[in-house]
Length: 252
Ligand code: B12
Image 1 (cartoon, rainbow, N blue to C red):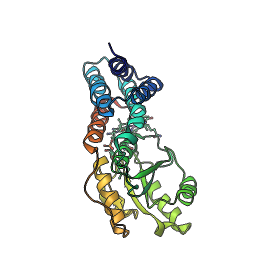
Image 2: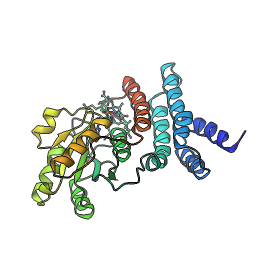
Image 3: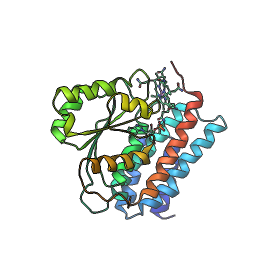
């Protein structure tokens, strides 16, 4: 078996068992050997995630196993993403993305980032549990055109408003457009807290980001999302898995 074939096999197995450092290393090795990123995605990572979903359905995997497998895939995706998304042109715009204070849900945000980068945006990922103070520092440091807030808990949704007010108080509100999203968020809620836009899913987040750039007066290409079909497939694989996770998520 060639090393390329071995890498695909090992990537499949290590995504299944959720070994993120290994999937990261193998993906990098594959890329260094000149493997096609689409081959890595469609012949190793996505099949592994589909198998995770199957194992969950037959009761062999539970939510924790699904989570660590999704993480292992995301670490591999982080290496593939810039290559898949490399359109060789100037970034469309700069977006700062974060999950609000008190909230550690980041899968939805990360999927948006995959799609945004695939569409040519430069994305600064601030991670989870980000305070309004850290947001302000980052806006000053990176000067993005757009900021994106993610929240998955009804108890953390109010941080959208807190963040927007913090931007206003710091005199930064007119420098950025604010987009928001997350499982419990509706368009009505987004508008009521003063956001400029709401995105229900990762591909809509790209449409929204482009629209907001146009609203700000930037001239951007509204079509041509590069390799977005590949990104879409990866995003769908993770999303399918997480909708299964909801079936036995411990709430409260
Ligand atoms: C996975 C998960 C977890 C994981 C999170 C791991 C991680 N790294 O993200 C873990 C196990 C850590 C977790 C913990 C908790 N969770 Co939880 N979790 C989930 C679950 C099952 C899936 C969430 C997810 O990732 N979905 C997949 C993504 C892709 O979903 P999505 O919404 O479709 O995402 C899209 C859009 O929202 C949009 N989007 C997202 N962000 C943004 C941002 C912008 C700018 C834009 C434009 C768009 C956008 O694009 C995304 C991609 O397409 C949900 C159930 C659910 N239905 O959401 C519960 C859920 C969110 N969790 C819940 C709860 C209660 C908790 C805990 C409090 C449980 C506990 N008792 O400890 C803790 C809270 C921890 C904390 N402080 O944050 C509740 C929230 C209920 C509520 N109304 O507040 C839910 C809804 C489960 C339930 N049915 O009760 N959770």
